[in-house]
Image 1 (cartoon, helix red, strand yellow):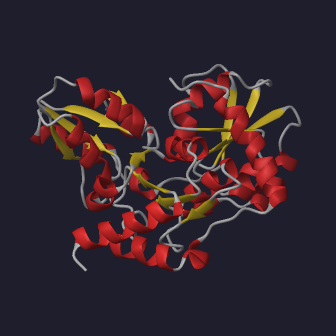
Image 2 (cartoon, helix red, strand yellow):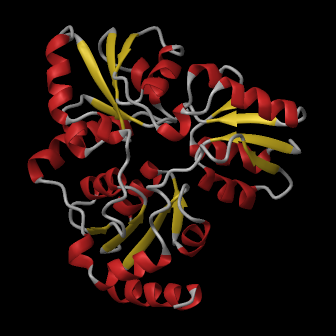
Length: 307
């Protein structure tokens, strides 16, 4: 089927099932354009929890669909590509976090990035996003914090709080593989460009940036940006919403071959349609005992505003 026919088929089923179609900012452009809502993982999960839709189609990766299922336990959450995982989320298991907690001072708050499995969230005191990580850590009831699973976001956050922060050695390969040399080469090629990167990047990269922001923060920045050019250090799918937000700015990937998440690119219009024709096989659920504890960590996070 052509894209138009696929979208029409998807929309027809969603209308019949009172469904909502969500797409992460890193998804393929044609998926983003056809979805009802686009955004970062937490904003989409919150949108899912606030809608009266009965079916949620989440075009993203597995932990995102889990978060939607945690926040919307009465709704059917459909993940078109069940094999779309997150390598960073998979770098720590609940069992590993349990063992790590045994080694820590009991007076340590466990802060876990939303880019994590439901089981890991369930073993955490509070979750955070890349937009509110510093606020979450600053609000921790103890002087010591252990941050999982992203070491780079942990270091970015640690530099912005007086708390003692230790971290798990996980990372997002898209951001972690960007190096200072890539930034310097891009700046040499485009000396008049603003450099904007994600806080999941290495400290050597964030140190060279003019703006460090989450995907939602990047989008907010882009809407009023006056720069003629912007060098962007995050997953390449983000260029699409940035360009839609401000066509006057030329958004340029810093190192395009590195800035691709294969998992995010698995979802196609064909796989969305196929999943809706076989919803049982694509429904993501979270066991009740994990759901309740993970929900507690997410609810604590939601009480703290983003920067």
